[in-house]
Figure 1 (cartoon, rainbow over the protein chains, first blue to last red):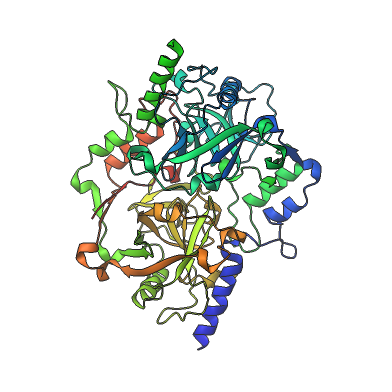
Figure 2 (figure 1 turned 30 degrees about the vertical axis):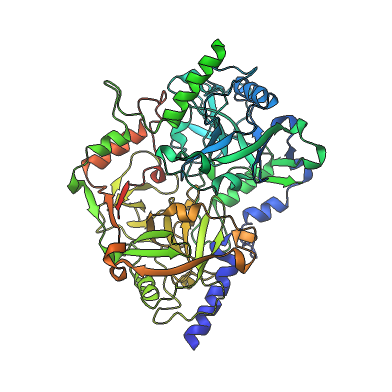
Amino acid sequence: MKKRARAKAASRALGLVALGLLVGGQGSAPPSPNAVLETAAAGDWRSVPQEKLVYLMLGDGGRVVIELAPAFAPRHVANVRKLVGDRFFDGLSVNRVQDNYVVQWGDASEKRPLGSAEARLEPEWERAAEGLAIVDVPGPDGYAPAAGFVNGWPVAHDPKRGRAWLAHCYGMVGAGRGDTADSGNGSELYAVIGHAPRHLDRNVTLVGRVVDGIERLSALPRGTGELGFYESAGERVPIRHVRMGTAVPERERVEVEVLRTERPVFARWVEARRNRSGWFVNPAGHADLCNLMPPVRVRS
Amino acid sequence: MKKRARAKAASRALGLVALGLLVGGQGSAPPSPNAVLETAAAGDWRSVPQEKLVYLMLGDGGRVVIELAPAFAPRHVANVRKLVGDRFFDGLSVNRVQDNYVVQWGDASEKRPLGSAEARLEPEWERAAEGLAIVDVPGPDGYAPAAGFVNGWPVAHDPKRGRAWLAHCYGMVGAGRGDTADSGNGSELYAVIGHAPRHLDRNVTLVGRVVDGIERLSALPRGTGELGFYESAGERVPIRHVRMGTAVPERERVEVEVLRTERPVFARWVEARRNRSGWFVNPAGHADLCNLMPPVRVRS
């Protein structure tokens, strides 16, 4: 009886604070990441203009919104805009869902013309670090000499070479390619849905990040074919259409804001995630780049 | 016309080698991870005995198999065995699916007695490194002074303190707890389904790893409540029953083998993943601990 009562109490606590995400500042303990976030002023959030947003509408009405990254992949972003503008993706499908890796969508028939878009593009795997105000995060990165954020984007860089590149964190979107470096044109896109496959950095061009609705992709049934491709047409997940935000009727648009990574509040949030308080007994003293993806808020 | 033909060729290539996972050794290039794996001898694989396997059968017949880690969490593993033996989990449900984080299952009613199992257990967040033949992986870990594998398990450790602990990599299974360190008794279990939440290391007791059927959990619909809890009973995913492998009828058992992490073939596989060849133009020169989870093969 006593055991049961104790078990119940323990279980209740679990229901409320399971895995410690809801625990805020307690007394003089350092604040939780969420508590830090609550101190962010309106100006600490960057509003994403509709011309940078891609709306991917699935057959069941599910919406996935992607922010494009023209500062890192201008040619690929321009090509994606052409493909979207030409309605290339309308009626196509999600063809591949590989667990702990990627979801990929495009033309399963491999026959649809690319319209005004280019078929081949020089890769944009990295760029000059010059001109980027990278705010490094503390600690080793493993995959690069240094890493941090620029304007909300996860960026690894090599100060010696003066080069910087987007990192394959959860939710990042890239342009799949074939054997040649120039074969990724944006007509086959993928989103990361697992532990960051950072070995893809500087091998595929990243074009953006899913800022709303990643769970519409990450919870799709896994494909049972090689590389997680669906084995039959019936398994593929239909795409109703894809539109740039500017072409979406105003009442169907969402307002997307990303926490400004150059502001002190982001540094405080990073520190709170590196050393969690409250429920946590042993703060890690570290958080890797992809565990520090800046918060996004979305309003319909 | 020319453009179209070129587009088609590029797209075909994408379909075949998308994101480079199928590319093997090409000429004198270093072998791919899969090519290394093909060189593994029968003795390079460790067979997991049925007494270490937990079979979680979902309501729709989906099977999830977990290998327990008694070397790291003997008390918690013993408690889980009691709970399973007493059929504690039968008829319960998956109650929480938080995107890029965890799937959690247990007693949503918080009323079921724990039977012969303990309600409170001293945490097993770390153990003495002594007695563990840890094979370190190269490169910095960020979250710990060193990290590697023991008998297939991802282990971070601190040589100065002589302590070692399991790491929260994708697919790892832990015992959820409430506010107090001793409140995780194994009656609420979770599996990692996102980028490794290593900040949970040494804050929750890990008890095992999903070795088969993680996609039965990772592809479940996300909960829309706080922390990804399902908001209504109807959304919960029923658990038909949970059994130790020894209690599963022989024809329904699976044979699980894990690549032996102390063998040279594992070191070669790690190196192949750190520096990929073939499709990859820029090898990373690194792979983090959770991108090196040892391959598992399963036979029905």
